[in-house]
Image (cartoon, rainbow, N blue to C red):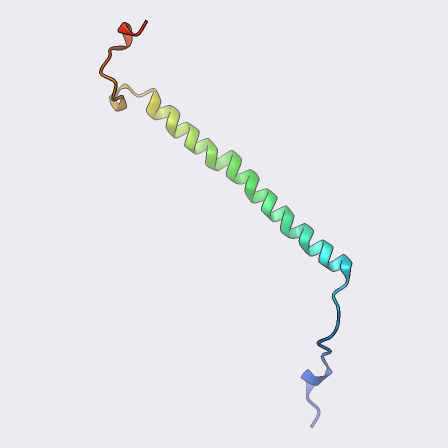
Length: 69
């Protein structure tokens, strides 16, 4: 009986160029996600902090703003 899977040689080695190409693609995806996180994720965090900082209703400070200076 001739099995098709016996024709596959499990000792074959992957070419170094293919390994480098795969690692390069993974690095590209990782770097792209890092950029998206930096520009989009942190942008919303800063925007949310700025919105609550300028909102006098959310302020816990009881000192009037005119008495600060």
